Image (tube, rainbow, N blue to C red; front, side):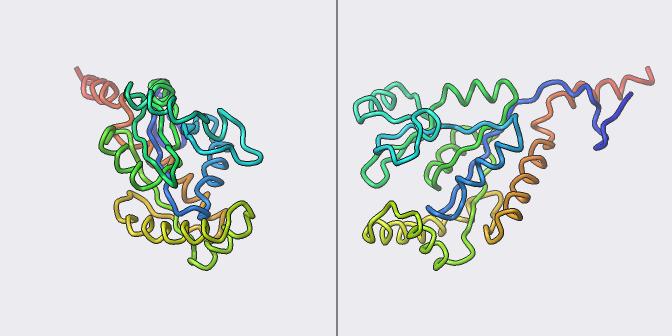
Length: 220
């Protein structure tokens, strides 16, 4: 039998993908980390959230978010079309089910860029599929500076986001992994290691049962 460098058989067969949840205060870097992880892992895709908030400059509908009005969003809620949804800063956000289930069944991993409330709901609905990662800023001052440099929000909005950041950070212990985004390259490397380690979990390698059966029957 020919083995890979890691010792696993090459004819591994399929696997079900995982839901890799990233949460952080606004401005801590989770969105940039998500995009870079996807760029260097072609079998990882982003769960594109649906929202009712206005589109920001440079955003693309269907790529950054799926932008809908309140009536369309509420219709999806009624039809149980979301894993989770919430109303944040007077706007709806939700994670649609259908595209995620399709990706998981094809063995692709799906990244979720959501807050702690969404992460909790997602873990409740799909505990076997979810891996939660929290991204911390190196300091609150740096976090505030990042928000100011965006130049997109008023002082009142930034103050609100900083207050919410403290509330968000208070839930860090609910996560499987925590990354401090002090050095972006280092944080990205940690996230990539988490992805590949979680792919090796026994429960995500269904071919192992058949392989072990074959091993046990070799002497028959």
